[in-house]
Image 1: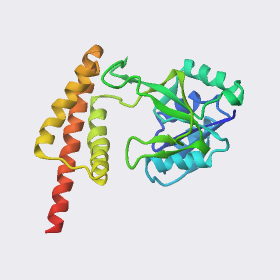
Image 2: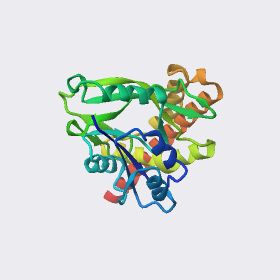
Image 3: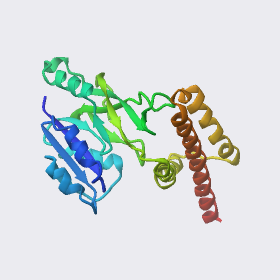
Length: 258
């Protein structure tokens, strides 16, 4: 069982070294860099990665390109702001020595996020299972703009690995706010629009409060103290802004038809 660890990156000089070190156990590390203007490429090469530069086509397309370009048939996909926990590393090592007949076609892994100086338990942020280790012949990356994921063949067998992917995605409150306003809400609205979904003033008004209640109460965000409160509040803002941007798209399209 030979594994290529794939990482897509753009201006990730602050993260890429630790990401590469986290998958140093892999038989190959492949970084697909989308024209970074910082030292991402050089640092990745220093970390033992094979680096390919490629213009940005979108998350799913870039991750699929990485899988297609990998030397080995088993793919472990890691984002630049993620790390492999020691327990997960041990689980993958156990797989490497197992008979081929005992292997599944893909493996789900829990992802644990570090936010406001603590590991998050609630708010829907954990266990946040991700299918990241898989036979590339049995699956492909899918997702129009955000929330890309591997879709395996219907007959594929999926199992779950012990250990976590450690996620360091949000640096501080200002960064979290920018991520929502500049990336997640616009892309989420665009994806909803292209899927034929539409919103209304009533849905815009309801999106924020209902999302806050779901994150903070139903999904146990209150267990994480102030961090859980902030996660729920930002989730509420994201939902509100996404629906508002979707409404604006609808209005522009309607005006164009007049």
